[in-house]
Image (tube, rainbow, N blue to C red; front, side):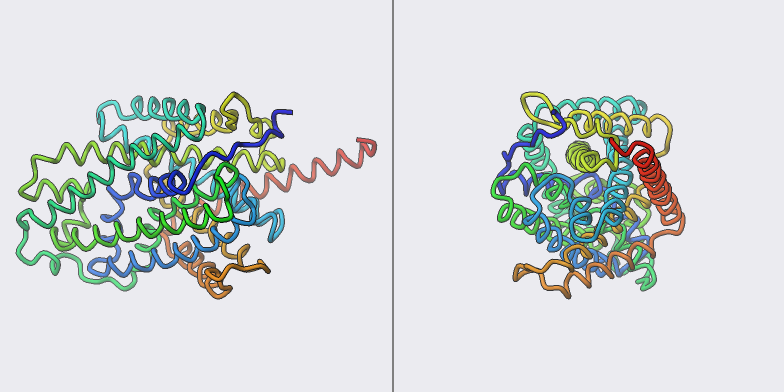
Length: 423
């Protein structure tokens, strides 16, 4: 009977917005500008705006669907309801596999900032501790997310102040370095979109928010608006404070912005903020992946034990523990930083299904016209196929393995049903 227990609605607009914004301002904000600047050069701002526009389309589609289907699972659930089982599975499988790799990347980022010589053990410890927090219930998750988000926001304000007040290290500043690269705008936008995608966490928590028809759309749009403003301002300040060339080559652009200013003594604050951001993103990722795994297990697209809900805090403890185990395996066996690209591909496919699902809705809110869903669908596919070829190839293989596995399981179930007609 445990698998049929329901999660409890405990989150309001502020909590849900905090979880979404905490996800979008995760460790990505401390690193994403460099590879994007390398691809787009002085046209980085165009990539930020493009990524934000497509993210808005996806956020609207997510809000439309989540208000109608207020249950765990996000686009996995929406795809099944609106398009059929196979599109729903593609979305769910892409999300679970891609975001599990992202969990490992966030954990390793935390390890590198806190103890570079012991990055992997520290990363594993972070996964264990945050999984424990999740098992204490969603309200604890929201509380810790708010604390971490406050630390990150304070760090970003300090970086902005350093960029504005500190002496500029190069005279030409904004105009130096790689010129604008029109061909790099799309792949750079794909990387920037990876940083925006945290609002999916709000939709995957649809079974745990109060008054979901109002709370989810408000939280999703508020979190995206806040994240877009922050990313756009940071991009402008970094390009003005550092040369585009230095920004493109940096492995820690926000830290470099501080060390190249009159506020360089505050560099440890940036390192602490990056560590907090990694923890916040990891916490939200573990939560979201666990809820999607729960939804897929309820529909028998993943093993049924993953649907078990238990404890006084009614959490999907088996799914949470399974996600933690998978992340630890990745940390021990894989250089997870190489899979961020295919994670981006998986997220874009996930949102392509979101927009297609929203397009088929008959009862539509005023903020979600069909043309916006069509633009979001096309934008997701364009950004996905323009990512680096290796990333696209890896995720295509992962998706193919999942589809083949599901096909095989369905065939096996059908044969068993034929052989045991009374079952």
